[in-house]
Length: 370
Ligand code: TRP
Image (cartoon, rainbow, N blue to C red; front, top):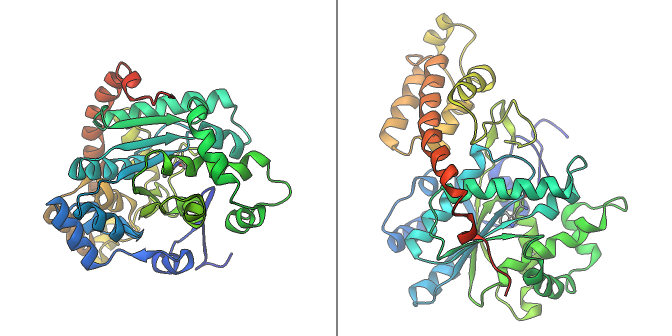
């Protein structure tokens, strides 16, 4: 792989991603100014994740809005592969899903794919991925979803509901399609090969159009789903994609739940957060204070700044001051990190409380097989 190359698949993200190139490669559409305006008209809000391009690409979002404007409701679907504890990067698409759900007043399904992570990770047992599914569900619930309209699907638990849908999907996808889409080889286990039909299944759980907010690495699954949907008499799922959230150690690669150092977990204590950021967060600052004051820092590669932009500082005016001060050298790297540490720790203090409460709420959220 050359320096300006990158890889984005559901199981492997590497390199410095050029999102315009990725849009071309995947054949998705960039979110245009017109679409932003249309979403704003329908929701009454200019949401920062849209405005800042954290969600940057889509497939057929306009069709969802066409239907909605005619009075036809859609539903939302997203998910998580439970390969470890939840880290703060995971919360980005979930928070966006929550915003969409509130604004459009629609149902939401959240799929936890314990089977997938068992198939794709050598070092995890099915018992472990299933335990992580329940752990991750607590973080999802802690964001404040309405249990009347929000259901959590756990693959091994809800297979009875998923399987008939997955069978219809699986029959229409042939091996050469999945192979070409995911780069499977003869050594790939056959669970992986079938798996994409299980990730497709929730798209057809209600007989309505579906909108899926998701990390762009998950797009290939739904490219296949979209191809086969008309063949089983269903509507194609519409998608809205977010960028990959960088790990603490910097650009290139997403925050990985399997690497402790580069990851802030939702259960980390204030002290651990502080240590991780001070020690590992990639800095766009200069070698020493003198140089930094003279030359200024680079917020565009600075991970602390990026976390503020993506998640922790929704106020544009405040974010701009941080940007300008860092760039001019007025704000030092240590000071920028201190701002982020404070933001994350005050977020996590509340989140951890709600996460505790979620333990008694989880049963209201679990999808019941019919
Ligand atoms: N495969 C996804 C992951 O590893 C989990 C997932 C299941 C998902 N269904 C989804 C993600 C729908 C986005 C949208 O995280």
